[in-house]
Image 1 (spheres, rainbow, N blue to C red):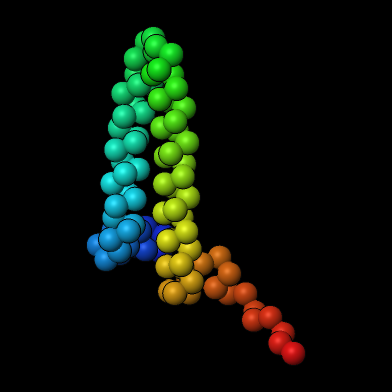
Image 2: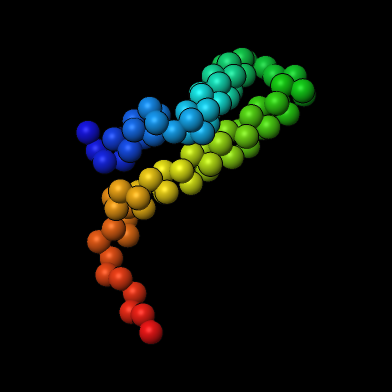
Length: 88
């Protein structure tokens, strides 16, 4: 299991905000899949589809912020091996 997957699993078990965002993302994805599966959408449904896509992306961005914090805490992020900046 990758470190990223382990971090997500840990956050799903321990971080209430991440849990709520993950549930919201799933709900948005389910509704979006329903709309996309329809052969024809009315104008309000098209608007809903666009709105759902935007909201889903916002939620994903919020989840990514939490993941970045988790990576920083665990030292498993892409910058974990970077040398510290020279101080003055």
